[in-house]
Amino acid sequence: MSSFKIYKRLDLTSSSCAGPIGELSGVMDEVNPGEAVEVIVADEATKKDIITWANRRRFKVVDQGQENGKFKLLVGK
Image (cartoon, rainbow, N blue to C red):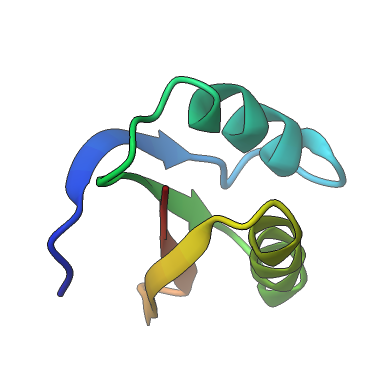
């Protein structure tokens, strides 16, 4: 695991297209260095989109996995 403090958990499994990134973007504006947001998404395409977005914004995807058919990411600042 990581040393990041979980700031918030977002279940974005019901969102699609740009929705998850928009919601995550708003929350990441509130996150302080050393904190992270746990994100749960329903499909691999959305997971890949979030990873690409995080890299472009210079956030860190510090952990990722799959559980019960859903994808979990930990995006930190």
